[in-house]
Amino acid sequence: MDILDQIENQAVKTPRRICYTHRQELLTFGLLKKCSDALACWLINRFGDDHSPVIVHGHMQPMMLVLFLACAKSGHAYIPADQSIPSERIRMITEGAKTKLIFSAAPKQLPETNATEVIAFGQLDQIIIQNEGVPARSYEVKNEDTFYIIYTSGSTGRPKGVQISRRALTSFTEWMQHDFGLEEGLTFMNQAPYSFDLSVMDLYPSLTTGGTLWAVDKQMIANPKELFTLLAQSEINIWTSTPSFAEMCLMEPSFSRTMLPHVQKFLFCGETLPLSVASRLKQRFPEAEIINTYGPTETTVAVTKVSITQKMINCKSPFPVGRCKPDCRIYILGEDGVPKKDGQKGEIVICGPSVGSGYLNDPEKTRASFDTLNEMLAYHTHDLGIMCEGMLYYFGRIDHQIKLHGFRMELEEIEHALSSCRYVKYAIVTPIKRGDRYDHLAAVVVAGKHPFDSDYAFSAVLRKALSSVLPSYMIPRKFIYRRSLPMTANGKIDRGAPLKEVSR
Image (cartoon, rainbow, N blue to C red; front, side):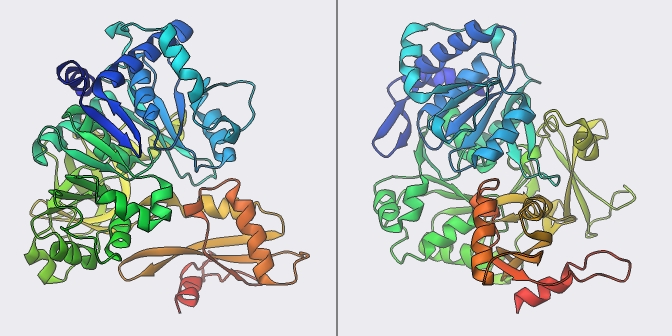
């Protein structure tokens, strides 16, 4: 059985089991099935054979899960959009995806549009009552159809929609079930917003194994006292997060086996796992397994895994990111496209059923990164890596795309937005490291004439302008003002010069 069959089976077998909890809100498997079936029937009646993508706009509401499944059951790919995303970015996503419908928990946050219908979450109860029934299976997204679309940063200033098929999602979920030792009925922590593909690492493995998702919202993260009080009541078995979130939690002395006695595994993805984080987790949770993974959004969350041992920690070397999942292959290619030998650095290319279907409505970018290799779908990651006896090691980006606190972004997109601001002539954005990973962004700006009496006032205006088009995690923390940008001997901007300056 694939993912939809397994979730359906859980609903029939254990309809009263809690599948999702967010604060005081609970959702059972039976209610998940009943409501998603009814909404799927409404979507089928409303759109028929028009399978255009549907945006689901919200945060950690249980209705998000219901709508994801309703879309899949009615043949629509869903696009998760967190409430923290600026309305201008949602407008670009809506236009790029040619979306005709948005389900929203906060309609007032959405951009005005005449081409897209908006259904508020408050309207859904009535729709469910009026459309109770079971949709025909023939309407479901098929194996090669797109199941979900996650928008990532784009170098032209417009986000890219990564299409993940039902086939790819099923491959990922089956791998999680079989190779991560997931038993039935476990409680998974859900820390990542649904617009971030790390959320998929707990969402579908939990639903298909009869588990319970325990949601962490932005308010909890902003209030550590509340977060740790609630975590102590959570009975979490599987912890899924970025290393940055775990590092934040480790600042609390009581964050240990005493607070979370049932934790079996820590699953990390989205950014480099620092030695210090793994070491402290081993000390505080000695019986829990720490699993490091790697994979871009375009290849369905993750394609490698490795269990971090005390021996690895004692070596004090960067951790490997793991061995490839059985149904995929990883090649390390040189600039000439020729495979590198073991131990030689090159571009990481991922092949197999986990590879997505390209970028929505963007054939040019799709051709630039997706092709076939050895008769398998292939994605060229632009990541540098080394393969040693089947174990992959990651060495950062080839281009200007980075991961900061688990969020992937194109520096060029931020530069494009910054250069579009009033009074800015040119700008470059530089990631600043703390230890072995990126800590924050700094912008070097060449300004035109402006009315501000201080750099501080100008920076405040730029931050406000950027916040209307970029998520908060893409806004530089530091702004440096210069009369010109440094150039290399061949006439290109010298990105290394500002990096040395702001790192001092």
